[in-house]
Image 1 (cartoon, rainbow, N blue to C red):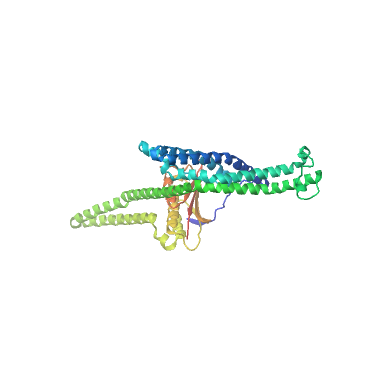
Image 2 (cartoon, rainbow, N blue to C red):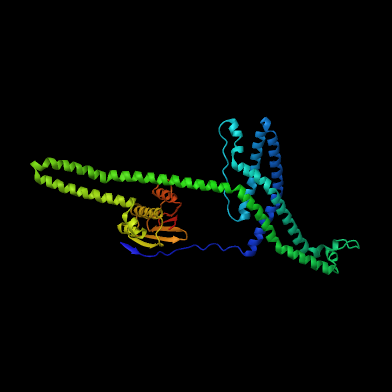
Length: 435
């Protein structure tokens, strides 16, 4: 039984964003603190790295320089770690952290580990190149804060300034008439200009310095993360393929192979019965024909689980309709796919997810109905399988859903499971796809 229906989508409204003024003030505080803290850290890092590299390079002829260079590179990690802790706040997004080379092997190899680690040299390079940017950021922050606060509060401390013939204020230097009210008004106007420009000036210099840190301190980490993700996907694909092969071998051994062994035994018995008991031979041939039919049906079922012909011939929607029709649990199916068809790897993975999920529903959930929705969600294909069963499904190693997660990971997909005790169970698979 297959009903075509569209499931309602329940979305949780996002938390209300902070007001623009509050966000601007918060970012101004972060950028200002970053500019002030970066300045002394940059001075210390610059002096430490430049001195250490110069001394280490000069002492290389007596091999002491190797230890000095290694110690300098190790020390450069400290300012780099401080900078990485600030980058998410300034840039407004998380940044990856690199993995440093591990010290292993003999004593000399352990000593030279920092010298062989590209990230250590990038940390040292950042300490050198960051210095002028930190000076610029600090000077701009101090200048604009001083101009804004001094100008806006000038009326409170104008009386404390000396007022003699040799003391000329800015208005007099510019050739204008001056007075207390004119000085206060002019200084307040300057303070307003500095106050308006303050967030943009501080933000610009902070971003300039932070982008340098992002390029030198986290770009290699992003590459490492991408390599790790690809390796994880490859391992997941290998694991999923191994599990699928073991299950296929078990299913063939427990099903068609047993029928074929029995069929061979029956045919041997028929050969012995043909002359002395033709009636028994005919009965045995009937049993053998039934066994052959059962073996053929099981082989067809196994082939549908591997790569059903309908999927290649008619596409994912028709293949899922066939899977839903064979399910012992009534299924409401909704499929909305784009044209042209998706990549074969995406279609095969989506078919596998739905067929395995429906098999789990029939075996373990105790559900009376199941809903399957397959739709495009931006650049990804979203597959949702929800049942009204008893729940309790977990996505953990050793469980059946772990195979689904590995199969999805092999194509950069993600599987999430929401299955509280008592139900319902909701599986959501998202597969990045291309036509």
